[in-house]
Image (cartoon, rainbow, N blue to C red; front, side, top):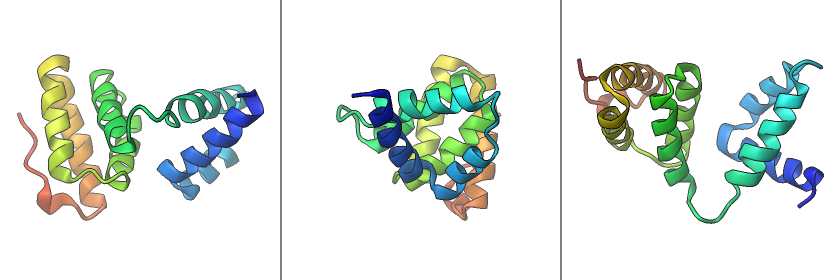
Length: 135
């Protein structure tokens, strides 16, 4: 695929996964300084990886939640908890992903991720299905 094709595919998947409002905000906040990053993330993450047929979007969401938890990327984690719900994960499944990740990434990472996820799930009205975070 050409860079233009990857961008077109990427922006389409990015909108499907993150929603038009999120992508519109990102585009509106893009500056000359941040434009190269926005182009790259759209082509690489969304156009080259999220479009691949090897994993469905639910599974990609699980992997993304685990990686963001391990890396302590709390703002990005909050966004991807929303994505995970949009991609069909239940609060209980998100809890299992975070618990499993905590075993390998450490209790502090898991504790922080549970707090972020619980806040986001409450905002989404999913809090009744969420167990209390560990710790």
